[in-house]
Image 1: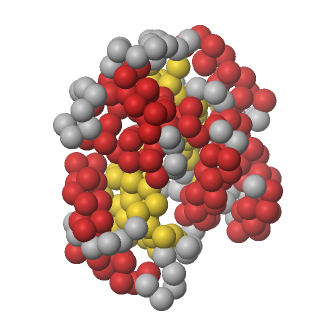
Image 2 (image 1 turned 120 degrees about the vertical axis):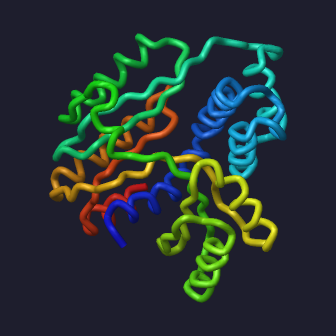
Length: 253
């Protein structure tokens, strides 16, 4: 398994820790808001992106009342309605790894200042729009829980269900789809009784870059700090981390 894939696996564990700290619900509510605005309405049977966002919120045990309020706010009918916009920042981490941050904010200037400060204090460089996104492509990613005994069976079921590719990253399987087939592949797997951990659109790097131990530690710190920003939604990188650095990082979560 590559150092990039191992990092993504560790992020699943970190996501659970974020949920315990109450961070995740805020990010999920904003994800619902953006899905309503981008996907065209508050009806999840019509708005595919909203359906994914609601499914993700439910899988993370977000209360139904919170989900309903987020949808209503996004539609302009609930309390606390505010103007939110989605902004993407791109740059280079220590060692030259590509970094992409998707943010949702009600104050563009505040968010820009916080992102710039985070890049600067970690020795990273904030770049122009498009400087690294050319090396990423949008894919649907479905994450399945697995055991050694059933991983091959699940992988074959995913391919038969329309997946483009499958990556076994014990204890998970990542199923890659085209953006437009994510929902159909997800439904095919669910019809087989296969439990799904997550299903979402993601930015997948076309190529990765191997980092030294020092560069890897600095980049991991940068990624954590970016994810902790109030307006941060998702962070992507093409960094390939050394195993020993990731093992140390895993123990700190």
